[in-house]
Image 1 (cartoon, protein in one colour):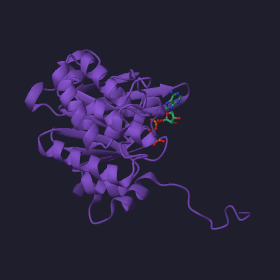
Image 2 (cartoon, protein in one colour; image 1 turned 135 degrees about the vertical axis):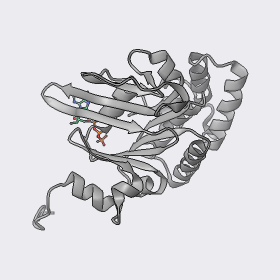
Image 3 (tube, rainbow, N blue to C red; image 1 turned 90 degrees about the vertical axis):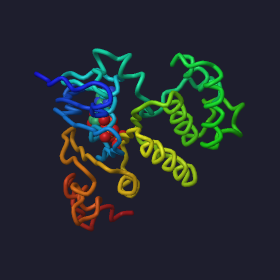
Length: 259
Ligand SMILES: Nc1ncnc2c1ncn2[C@@H]1O[C@H](COP(=O)(O)OP(=O)(O)OP(=O)(O)O)[C@@H](O)[C@H]1O
């Protein structure tokens, strides 16, 4: 496939995807997904379970090699020039695979070293992140012993540590308590107001409706709708649009009658 070369740097879209395809055996998980995420947007990727959100985002950030298509991050080819792309990117991956035999501060220090940051900056930012995300009291706990929500939060801290230009977050609010969710929303809103771009996947319409400037809806590996929140939603609620686009089985009223 011929792909127009996106502009690099300041003028580039935060993320450009061209015809991404991924197949697992006979299952076509992602089918020709193309998407442009404007710099400075708060972009929500919506879809039902198994729609292909994680697979798409994994290919977009260089964690899963596409069968076809290309992904650009701020104009840098994620697969051909991974160092340039990944230097500008923070990722909270699905399932948050972490080096979990470390404490939170150790994990952040390790991430900082991998990113080539100086120790004093890492130390100062790590302290702030642990404090803001209310992980400071668990400083001596190994990440392996963290709860699911705490793992999400330390994963987010790792993604933020090097102050990336673009954040890609897989279900950042999943398993997180309401107080922490509010804190995370606040951090992300401030980050976008400061010029950053957030792309995140979610099932929660209310969160997407509250935060996002743009949304995309994916189902069965196909991008069904995308654009600004206002253009996708129109006069309806996002949930109505989602249900209409994604479809789903209609209740007969007699299911699970034995229950
Ligand atoms: N490693 C894998 N091997 C085989 N099939 C896979 C693999 N990863 C994903 N799939 C399949 O690809 C499809 C898309 O999965 P994906 O995890 O991208 O969906 P999702 O939209 O993130 O779902 P959820 O909201 O439930 O997390 C699903 O049918 C899933 O079973």
